[in-house]
Image 1 (cartoon, rainbow, N blue to C red):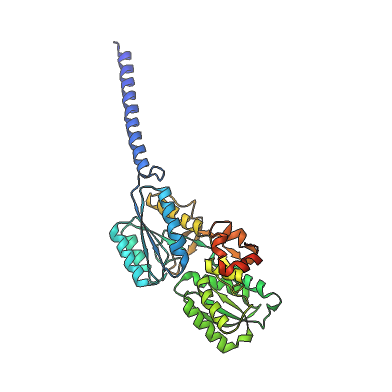
Image 2 (cartoon, helix red, strand yellow; image 1 turned 180 degrees about the horizontal axis):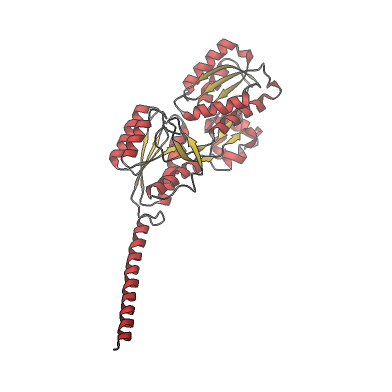
Length: 368
């Protein structure tokens, strides 16, 4: 074999070895990629879900199961570790510590107290855990935030109240305003939006926090009725349906009927009150897309993927952190569009809404 042929043979052998090694390397890379792919189910990450309370029915009934189902769909090897704080910031702090001990890769948390949880979030991040703020923007080094446009929620509530007032929406009309818990950053945003809609158009004669509790809201409105007089209250702004339930009871007890009462969360009881005419509106924040968005972010973070295509905007938390955010669009619900919103989306069936106590009202509303 001459020199030229020997060189050619060596080149062929070297090329063949390189291709073979590259193929081995590619196979290894593919295997590694598959192990972190949500479609392969190879990831075995633990994802923590911490919700704030069980009084607000949405969390246990909708958010939790929707979140768990989406995680399982995206990552069959992932598991969800769940806890509910039962309205205690101290309990939620303990739950974060428990999640750290369990070795979760991501914690999705709806903070009971957005400021109090800051140190817990820092502890998690120090251990290499990513944190997603869910529904409420927690303070601290949060990696992502999923919620609705909360200022818009407040605006929708205020605008619905004005619409229900009709010609009675005057600067002398006295409105009672029952806001959410000041420890919840969303409450301030709802309040801001509501004031933007109501200020200068009606007289907000009494304003207090109802702490997201029906009993507290009932007490506050009872005090407002004593202070202002039953005949002088034109309408009530309630920041959510839970409090609206307590307020509706207080109004009925005082012989007040036919005045606007807002809400939020599209709880079944709230929808039934709207059908019956004891509540005028609520705000529907579709739980499924919110929970699924949080689950998608959590899985992507667990797998080290970019979330820039999901979290397309930025929100600033109370601690000054700029947080990549995904904000969804809320919808106002009145008697006129129950069928086209919560029923159409499968949140409730007509049968669930139109029980015996509401059968007659449902028929009048065209829901039977």
